[in-house]
Length: 130
Length: 130
Length: 130
Length: 130
Image (cartoon, each protein chain N blue to C red):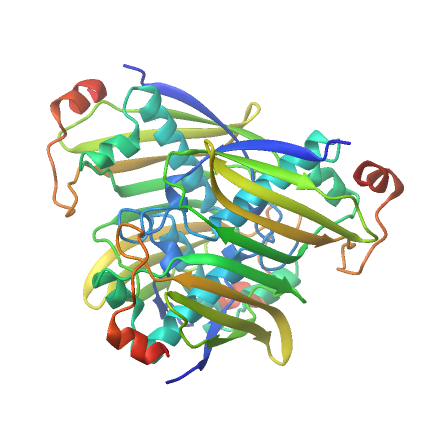
């Protein structure tokens, strides 16, 4: 079990907008990249889960924006995977530039199969996440 | 005053992901496009606001996902601009495909100037939004 | 046969970057949206083609940038579908803001099946495109 | 002088489309990220150039697509900066997944000032690039 993980990334030019900082939608991409890296570090590479027919779409999310990140900055996404409850998985995130908190948020995911129907998570996955 | 507005858009191929439906981050772009169209319909083209040094960055948002939208679908974003409170503007959204509710959410915005400092909204803008 | 088509679109905020105009990658999305609308106008909705197992990935493209488009501008994409040659389809594009030419480019596509293998285009599709 | 550089990156989920591989526009973002990392490795961090009022917009590009990259794959972008000619800078790219060539392409850039007018590159920058 590895409930907290740090993912490092660098702000890309394409992620900025004409306000001169990162567009608010890009933080969802950062959180997703962090979630994938975190699951992989726990022994759950997301592409292998999908290959087994297990999908984790986002069903709810929130983000709070405190500061704006700038092009070229090195950001740290601290993700915290909450213990699994039924078919729902919740991940919390804080994104930092150095010590400055830029944004925080959460995503809630449902385990579903290929057709989108709710799915009980396979036992090995459930064991790693609980 | 025109507190509710409907924006029509068509799902682009680039907005899908390998799950076969719209990536969850794309709905923020749809909400933004709807917000801009709504403000324009109220007599507040956003590019003119920025040209006057008035910016409306997102400081908080949430989204709930009920169904997945698909490539080529025609979506309707119903946006509702809440009456202005101080330097904060809140907009609520519901996104439909036909009668089916796909997602709903809100964004909260702060009025700031070019340097990012909070700004009292200019009187004409405040009048239109209150 | 309808070899030329005009698609109208409005520049979204998220498509700008900190240079203050549309990011160069966004024009590929505009061209794709225009191609899809053009094919639909010809009686070939792209999502129906994919549902039949016929895919048209991009295998080559070029873009020339003459002017920069700005947030909120209304753009016209003039697309021209070239007569089909074997399993290759070429589309040329010019993107205008009013009378000003912003960019021009082309995309080249291969007909492939679900597994990515080259595919002879179905007879009805070939007939419409030649 | 450091004319060739390798940038490593991992395909993000958001960069895929419903064909099940990386959307063709994402490679422009990869090339841009590689170009920025390459210039930084040469002692020319792009955000510092912009802070000095020197911009390098793309004025021409081409891409050839040989294979499709998949979610989660580790890609290597090999960028090669060509010697500066006047106010034009050309960069060539090859993107690999292991030994497999995925795409190749080039971008051509103009040196311009804040208002978009052509600009003779400052002497120190020209020295590093020639």
